[in-house]
Length: 117
Image (cartoon, rainbow, N blue to C red; front, side, top):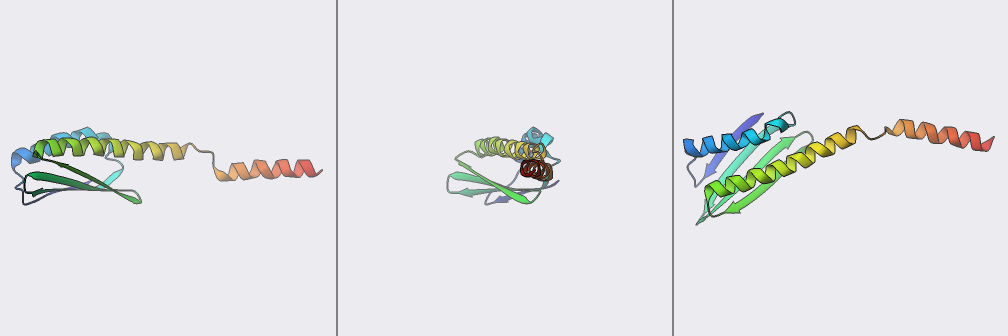
């Protein structure tokens, strides 16, 4: 997993970087699905914006958060990330257990042949 943390009009101090890394431990059980993780923190006047682009298999997940405090924006962003990644993982797991299309077609053809005879 490639991780990049970018600050625009905000200096990413070691304290903020360690806080982000601590929050990333929350999503460790999703890392097998994540290929690239890009976090961008910007500041406009008195409001901090944080957005993240997460590249997963065949999809890019984009999440955005905005608050007046840098620590709270990171908290809300990682809460949203956890929810989105959990939904993504559940969707993948649900698709694995659906009956394959081939088996459905075979049973329907056999029933049709029996009805004709």
